[in-house]
Length: 150
Image (cartoon, rainbow, N blue to C red):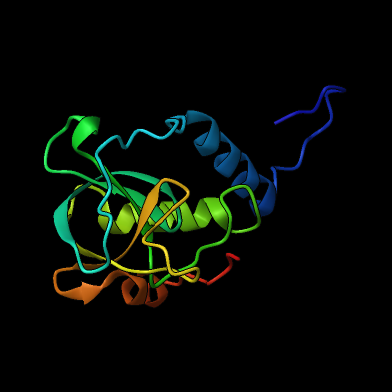
């Protein structure tokens, strides 16, 4: 390989290749949908709902719905895991981790009260969800998830 002046060029370092690969993957990634979950949210703590994960918005937010119609998707904020913000350090990795763990898989969720005592916060229901009977927050931590939100 030769550089622009015809001299022998050194191959790029592993770090440069890793950054280039990460940037390329980010550019090819599907763009985020703006709030695709449109189903009415549970209003009381203890309400139970389930369905396959249809969409992952960030490291602690997802949509669960029985059909492919976004009007049947319930937007969930996980009660037992607080991921880094999507645009902050580790945010994209947190989203990718959650997506790899749950996308298309069946979750069973129970609405819960959050820190302010409300069940619905920022148009999402706060819920504890399980995957194959195991708490989702625990599964995220077991796969390297780091708490980083507010």
